[in-house]
Amino acid sequence: MSSSQIIRARHLCATLILTLGLARASVAQVSAPPSSGPPPTPLPLSGRSQSSGTVVATETPVPGPTTGVNTLNPVVEVQGSFRGSTRSTGRRPFSGTLSFREAIERALEFNLGATDASALVRQSRGLRASARSELLPRILADASITSERLNLAAIGVQGTAIPGVTFPTVVGPFSLYDLRTRLSQSVLDLTAWRNYRAADAVLRAHELSIEDTRDLIVLAVGATYLQTLAVGARVDSARAQLETANALYQQTAQRRAVGLVAQLDVDRSEVQALSQQQRLLTLEAEYAKQKINLARLVGVPPVDTYNLGDRVPFAAAPPLTLDDALRQARDDRADLKSAAAQVEAAQRALGAARAQRLPTVSLNADVGTLGNTPANSQVTYAVVGAVRVPIWLGGRTGAFILQAEAALDQRRAELEDLTLQVEADVRKAFLDLQATTMQVGVAGRNRQVASEALTLTRQRFDEGVSDNVEVIQAQEALANAEFDYINSIFSHNVAKLGLARAIGQTAQRVSDFVPTP
Image (cartoon, rainbow, N blue to C red; front, side):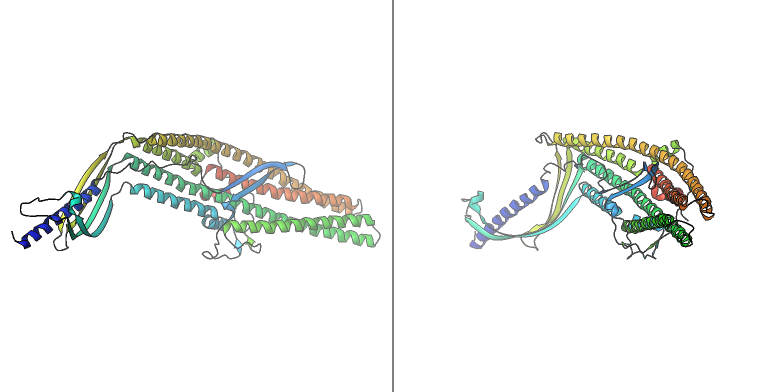
């Protein structure tokens, strides 16, 4: 054998050794089974909405704003993110007059509560996509160029393997070109599949929570708007009462000038006029602050210079029986549907935890070209199917099952509690509506009688039959009756809005319960 043939044989053997070694490494990489599979999706212990705000509108029997008689007075509490908003005038021009319907439409789009709920849904979609990725194939492509110098003695090639050919101790350097596409696919993995189903149920729960958030926004903005209208009506009433008190003061002062009444009557009239002026100043400040609060809810500039729409008059609630309201609430309340979806998600998560004890089947493959140079590269491939049977995972599966069972028990308890709460909300809303409807009738009659009493008292004063004490008392009684009537209309409208919230789909039904001009 010639020296050139010996050298060529040495290079050929070394190259073969290098190629086989790298090829084995490539196959080993493809055929390696997954270590443990995806863990079950962990769920928080509570499935209640993670919203950072609350909206509560209640009718509280407390002494009225002007008398000691207990009446139903609305209390509107808006907390957290529902109190804020993003600026809406950049995308939706504002004319300077805010109607009831426009306030609700702007709030549904720009209130911070809606923004937070939308962000939560987007996060849930990302989690579902992440869970789905465990079920889809993964395809990778890579290219590598390897240059290597081998110590043959270190890998067991030494001595004379072929008669007449002596292998050197060190050979190389040698080059290896590898261009490859790799595929991995889960064929059967019940944990990954149930994780995806759980994530999908969580997403549906959060999408339903958006609808519930919209109902809360309508309740918050609608009640705040009605409250602002009520304060504005009180301002107008106080302004009219002030004009009446000033007129009486001027009349008394003129009669004093000609000696028909005593100075005490003038003083009484002036005290009444000053009291009405103080009341008006207080109400005007409250009205301005209420308009600023309303502006913050709907995304318009937080000023008090804008105008409100027409007042919302008294209108009877839509004909609805208690049984019908309870049925609609069970069918339409978005928070109830969301809680049911949370229970489903917890059931899927528990199934995923238990599926950790089941075998999984996976497929791994690669195809590409392998050679010492790009010119002499050949197509190579490997296909490996693997079955993984979990025997003992150190108690991890049992721990996941315990967590999932606890979350499921909590979700079921929350659903049962919310079901009872929905029924309680409907029943209390019906009681509030009945009471405020009667309250409107009583307050209206009281206002009518107080107005007649003031007219008769002024006639007696003009005729000199009595002093102005009776007139001042009648004026105060009429002012109180006016305020009570305004408050009763406000209470009735808030009660209707509360009933709309109690039965669900408030955003769609608000115009039926609170019709506006």
